[in-house]
Image 1 (tube, rainbow, N blue to C red):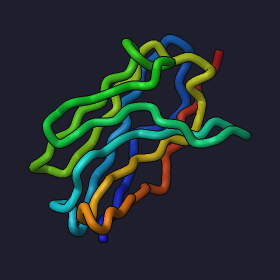
Image 2 (image 1 turned 90 degrees about the vertical axis):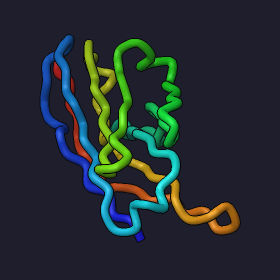
Image 3 (image 1 turned 135 degrees about the vertical axis):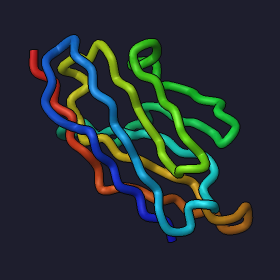
Length: 119
């Protein structure tokens, strides 16, 4: 099992910045790719950014150029630096880790951290 704990959410004014952190524990050595997802109020959960163990990353078009995902593999840490935040970035942000094996993949989720951007 893998446990994920997010932190760093909060209230920020439009144009401001926040950095989210996600700490993985348990069988963290089994983790392959990691990512950040968000769920705005009343909407579906959506991918924000994704990073593989080799550092290759991808972003949703709405955050490209404003958000940066990074990870420290030997410390099992994942980060999301969010700049130029806008009210539409308001959401619960979730950390996700892909683990298990090729034959039996397992997806782990954190509890989420709330980000609120005021206009």
